[in-house]
Length: 465
Image (cartoon, rainbow, N blue to C red; front, side):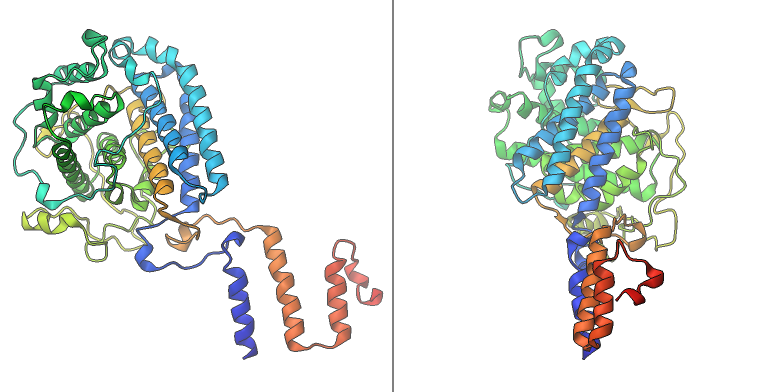
């Protein structure tokens, strides 16, 4: 009975979250909840990313500047939507990143204009203020739907030149200077064409963000009702989700498909598909891809963290796409890799001109530039967007737990507070003495030692009592 009492008291003391000691969560929460540790790691990743871009601001291009604006605007949104229950230390760090992003943006704008003048003239309006992602599904949260999977390819082959014209017409730049929200019938057909893939479909989704960002909703009244537009967005993100899972299933192309995955997460996560695109496993993947210097480049690591054991066809959460995909003979879910296997998925070697799913991967959002150290500007930009979308959704929808254990113990970073451990030890000794009813003299000795521990001479401790 005595041992049980001591055990219960110890658990009560050691289980206090503020002491930083691990507790075991409900297994069903493993892929549902993020941790405080992960939030801080995500913020640190943004800090490192911004520091890299700031150090290399002489090489910045429009894509990198847009990524900085995404970080800035997304975190400003985060501060505006969270409530008072969010940890003040986290909010302070987020505010600090916003201030730093503003500084990096201000210092880097000149170089982006110098290094990519043509793109800058086309898309200057995108960089004029922080980029904010607005919910595209009516203000709530949405899930992907297997009934919306494309059954055939698109009718239109979207050319980069046409896509640029539609972008400029929406934001009012280039030949559309002063005529913001110019969305022609040709552009509307491109924006809403079903069956596109890769960057073409993420570009289509981008237009709906631009329409909201630049207050062009009224320009669409004669083209489609709000309910119809929401259905279009749901269709796009359903197929983007399917494509992302197919990439993981067959193996990720270092560089080209890493970039695409992070763009998919950024856009659909920002659109409101939180449960499908804002996930602990995806965040860990993105953080693992980051280089030590803060930038992103084709991943050349030999393995990913063992904690990413999430693509388990049998154990993972019920997925609304599973039935629909399997009924079509399309299995897009990875087999489980047991812990200890250092390749959660395979990597395919990329060769110039290699095709993806029957179609050559279309161009990225604006352009890509590789620095001398191998850093990729566009990839770093969309990585910043994807991490920011995770931080915003995690804090806004409280997708985190105060406990540190969501992934296996060996992957956890836990800081033990020395003073907390000492306090627990002292309380345990006092409790033990009281419960056991030790004699007065030994108890007096131990208590004297504890209260005079700084000045004690351990050699003659017994003689001084």
